[in-house]
Structure formats: C-alpha cells, structure tokens
Length: 255
Image (cartoon, rainbow, N blue to C red; front, side, top):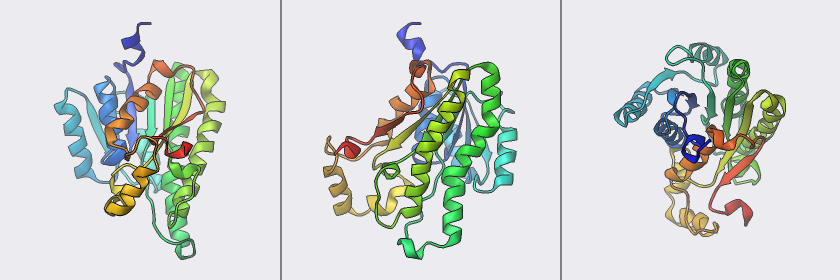
C-alpha cells in the first residue's frame, strides 16, 4: 500500500461525539478532510449544524444527531440511528465530556454520576453497540479522548481526572477484546488546549502562561495539533498500534 493510501479515509464512516465544539469538532473536521463521512453527535443542535456546514463547505459529508449521551436512553437511540445517513460507522471517536471544577469535598453525588456517565460510560456503551458491526466487517477503529489528568492530578478537577484515568484502562480493555478481530482501540491524551472545557484556565493569562512554560516546546496546544494523530489512529497507518494512549501535550507529561 502506498503512503497516501495509508492515511486515506475515503469510504469510511466516522461517528464523533462532542463534535459541536473544541477537540471533537476539530477531529471531525480532520477526518472529513481525510475522506470519511461524518456522523456528528452532541447536545446542541445549532452548534452541530454549524460543524456540519463547515464540513460540507470543504467538500465533505456530514450528518448530525443531537442527544445527551449522559442519558442512557438517548445514547441507545443515538447508536441505533447512527447508520441511517451513511451506513454503519467504521470509526468511533468519543470526545464528549464535562469538567466540573469544584474542590473534592464540594462535589455532589450528581456531579460524580453525570461526569462518569458522560466522560466514561458513554465511551463504553457506544462502543458496545457499534463494535459488533465493525467485527463483522473485520475492521474498525476506536479513538477515546483521555487527558493529562489520566496520569496527573490537578486541583478542583477530581472527578474529571478519575473519569479520564478510566478511559485509559477502558482503551486497553477494548484493545485486548477486539484487536484480533480487526478493531483497534487507542486513546489521545491532549495537553492544555483552549476549548470551552478549559475556558476557566485559558482565560487566566498568568496561569495559561505558566502551563505553557511547563511544556518542552514552550506553548500550549492549538487545535490543529491534534489532526495528524487523529487521522493516524483512524487509518490503516495504525494497523499495528492498539491499546495505546498517545499524549499530544508538547512534552508536558514527560517533564
């Protein structure tokens, strides 16, 4: 297979959660540019349609599914509708998430439950519903979005860190279960990127600068930095890569 073909996603269908903004939207745009048809999933219909139009304006194909993935009934309905537009997905990118920023002792049971349902359970449940069709075809890709907080603790972000630590182990478990049947599972662990999820930190110039200085490259992430890794993990280029978490963090986690 020639080099361009290794990264070509023409004929593939990718479902991306959290696709209305931030990291999920950026990855969706990248996969579309690589040739995949996109099923965009998030809660906010207007933002989803804006992402769909951006993909279509660049010559890609996209459909939207609005649902709250923390609601298991809505998640099940979303998974059932996923094949309607372009056929069953070959690629699942689980990027939807929330970060409830409170001191540990102020976290409520509802904070805990909603965070784990969206950040961890949704990645598990969507894969459980979509992977059987991938196995039947003998090819598929799972890309979970982990975090620096999969391996490091940051203040006032405890339940988010717990959920993202779980994502790393979920990815390993999925890889062990399905890789021999052609379905690889990997995770991307972003460093600090300016997104709606990190707005509280990014809007503090001194803190944002301090975080940049802790990286090896001397800056925080910019969303296009994620594109190459996402396309690699979604394509034939990563046929022999599974169960891994790739940190896209400018060296932050290696310091």
